[in-house]
Amino acid sequence: MSLEEAAAGAILIVGAPRSGTTWLAKIVDSHPDVLYRHEPDEAVPSLPDSDPARQIVAWAKARTLRTAVKRPTFPKSFITPPRAMIRAGLAHVLGGVARLPGAAAHVARLPVPDLVVREGLARLRVALKLVNWNSAAIARALPRTRHLFILRHPCGQAASIMRGLAQQRFHDIADGLAPSDAARTKAYAERHGVSARAFAELPLPARLAWNWRAFNETALASLETQENVRVVSYEALCAEPVRVTRSLFEFAGLSWDGQTEAFLASSTQTRDDAYFGVMRHSADAASQWRRKMSPEDQRAVLDVVSASPLTVHLHDWAPA
Image 1 (cartoon, rainbow, N blue to C red):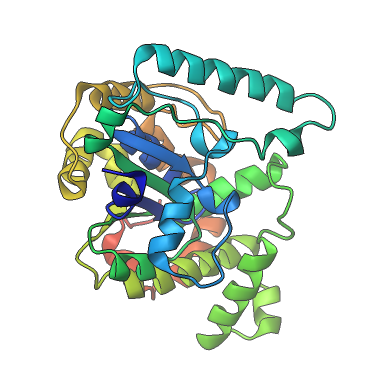
Image 2 (spheres, one colour):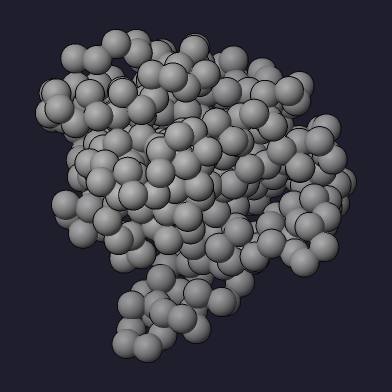
């Protein structure tokens, strides 16, 4: 089987920013048969003809350092240990060079070879993580693909973004929303009776709630009718990681593997508060907004989202 053939049955992990996409993607990546690409749309923009088959192959072939070697990494069935060591060494060198003055932009374009052994292609599965991307066209055109759409409680997502803003984690967000998100969100809110002036006067948590609705409601309206799409509750994944992951793997056509079970154990019981990390205490990560978000901010979010049809997917919906 070629990489092109494998891409036609790819697993796509999709969702909004700060919804748990990276953790879910790394859970999928922990399977030995998965060849993972992290946000390949940043390295390979949308093709002009928008052909889903060509687009997904182009993403599968993206091999930049950030796309092809997103940590943590895992042993793979299709890469021998010596080849894995060579690949890891190359990635380490490139990562070091990228920190040199003026080198980052050049290194970002260099490919990292997969070093896949030919006999390993037969069982290889491609997995792609995409943020703020509606994969409905791919789901319709390529029925062998599997789409895992992760949905996080809007208060948890808003609290996470607000924390990032306070820590100055984002370089492209003004007043809480990225430029591309702001235009979409304002238009969506206006269609639901909130004028541009009224939107501008909303508190930040309410604007983030409208952003949650604008992306998730639009994406799921086109995705939920597809049989190759599964909606994943972030809170349910945090509460029962093994049970939920087993169900998702069965849906995606992946066998259960001890390597995934070990990663779930380590990534759900670690007291690491790194903002972009995946090693956390999952139960605490899912519920900390209830302790750290003010009742006023929670109410601002819930007032916006209470009318959303997506509340049926949310785990433990009630406010603190």
